[in-house]
Length: 155
Image (cartoon, rainbow, N blue to C red; front, top):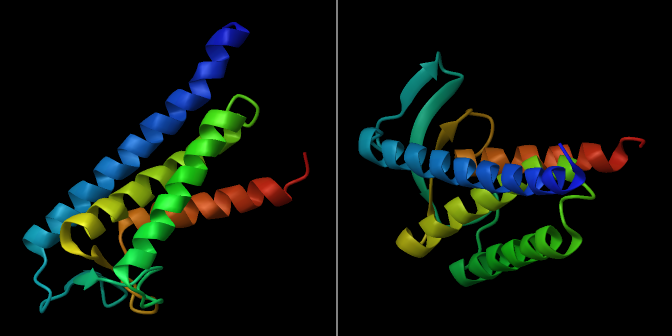
């Protein structure tokens, strides 16, 4: 494939990953709201992993209790910075960042939509040793880890 064809591929990867992460996040949250009673956690792997539905009005796995306006501003700033990185710096020079940046965008938009719609985020994955979280949180956390590895890995 020529140079012009390969330049568009990272952008396609970015948008497909973002759309997929967003859709999977929204589908799993809808399923949790439909099938998981907040008062009745569902055991998945013994007592190690459960489905426990909670409505999280804080941020960062519920660890930081902050007003929704502050969280909303933080997400909007993050999405704006991400948009700048993708459109101005381009993914053609750093195609390996398409996947993690797509995960960040999809996860951020998924949690943002929840906050705008319900004033909080539906969390449902309960590992019992960590606050309850959702797939958007997983995507963002994996993305940060991938970006960190990319920064410290020698070129």
